[in-house]
Image (cartoon, rainbow, N blue to C red):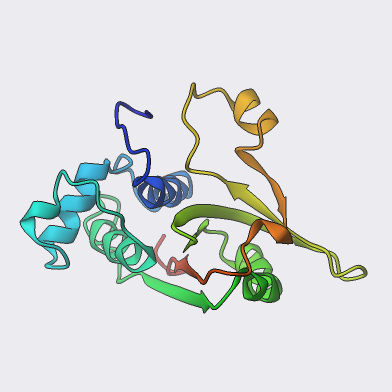
Length: 189
């Protein structure tokens, strides 16, 4: 349970969305508080993506839904009129292809910086960075694992590996993955 919500088994993509939204707050794009699971669900109903029974359910969301909600809620930000948010998507057939896209992800973090939601193998994670060693080819991914439950103690989160550099073997070669890379407009602020 986190923030009074028992989302075990269904809430990881919602939490990844909330991390991405926090990035938009910290970078001055919005002052709107981080949306709750219910607010995320209601937004999807309001835009016609989901039926009314979706609100309050334990149904998963994915990269497409995350882009829909980001776009809709950022348009309503109180700081300025936010143009439509562009999101890039990367689809891979396996974890090996995630690793093959490491340089592309590294460029994203160097030029844009938004966290990346990645979903696959019935799980969602948040990629915060990529370390690609040009000499050895070794690739590591800085992962914030939204499956963490416990106190909001950064020492525990880091020491127990809930936010840590993960090797390329972290991604299953037997599963596909979809990523959403939010692209805030450079002229928005």
